[in-house]
Image 1 (cartoon, helix red, strand yellow):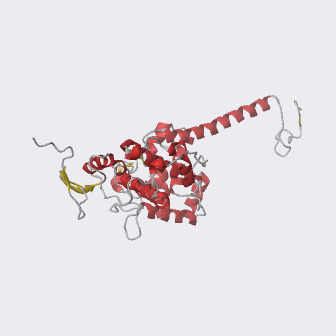
Image 2: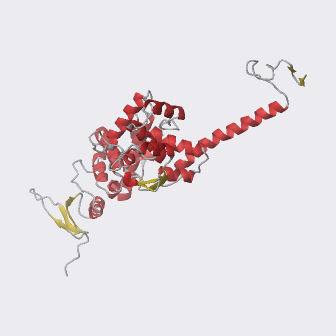
Amino acid sequence: MKRKNPFPGVTRAPDRHGKARWRLRRVVKGTTIDCYLPGPYGSAEFRAAYEAALEGARIEAPRAKVGTLGWLVEHYLGSIRFKNLSDSRKRSLRGELDWLRREAGPLPFARFEVAHVEALMGRKAGPTAANTVKKNLSLLFNYAIKNGFQGMQHNPARHADRMKENPDGYHTMTDAEIDRYLAVHGEGTKARLALLLILNTGAARQDVCRLGWQNVSDGRIAYRRGKTKIGADLPILPELATELVHLPRDQMLFLTHGNGRPYTVESFGNWFKDQTRAAGLAHCSSHSVRKAGATRLANAGATPDEIRAFLAHKTNAEGATYTNKADRARLADSGLAKLTEAKTGTNVSNLANRLDKVALQPNVTKGKIG
């Protein structure tokens, strides 16, 4: 009796030197899959590539030596896990992994230790970039452990020390900076519209580039965020409505190049950076505006869930960051107000004469009004 093929669609296809290769040819949901699978037949890497190919991932024959970090990167880039990322995240992560391949591609990943991870982190200039190296190595090592590559059982990147970063991350555009920007970029300009779109919708770069009249209905603007796939449905506030009236109804996208072509994520980011520089705010970016939108919601008393809905996040963890900061400021104001009231109630005056309203009154002495 013929033995059933445990990997339907896979056949042995020797190369010109007689070396065994394994080819997958199969039609899945109307799509023809035709690729060669890496690794020995039935091995962990073979099985992972087989399953990824059936899910639609592109499988390429590895160019790096099996067992090296470069090989692991190539294998991860052909995985379902990578395929499921948003397009913008794929672009940024591929660039980061390419750096790892250039720096340590030939090294055997299963022999990495904490010291090796921290040495690679040390090759980056800033703390954020260094911590990104740790994060990406951890991602790769976890992927190797899950798939049983090279018998790897522990993740050395997990135990590497993180470098201290700015806890606030990207700069948040202040109200004064927003006013300055709007003073430079007047009503009806594309630069002004771009800022107000981000400020009022919380849209990230890749999302604001796709917004148009098709997203507007009954005084609301709705879109699905590219990164999280979460939908946002928001009222159009008056300051944004004032700018939208300048756009013709037959214009598909709100923000385009002068010839009507849509922006890419990178080109929009560069263009917006030019607008902030023109306003003398070179330290601000489109993400600075997005954070400003969330910050003003928090300062107005919005809950973490309300900020999550505004930013189209999956959880309210980021919203809690903004509300916690706003709460600290409110609590500090409340505490200092109580201190001032206590001092005023006991006629205690410790202010300098030029600021002390009591001392400046001619008929008032300490503890007595005459």
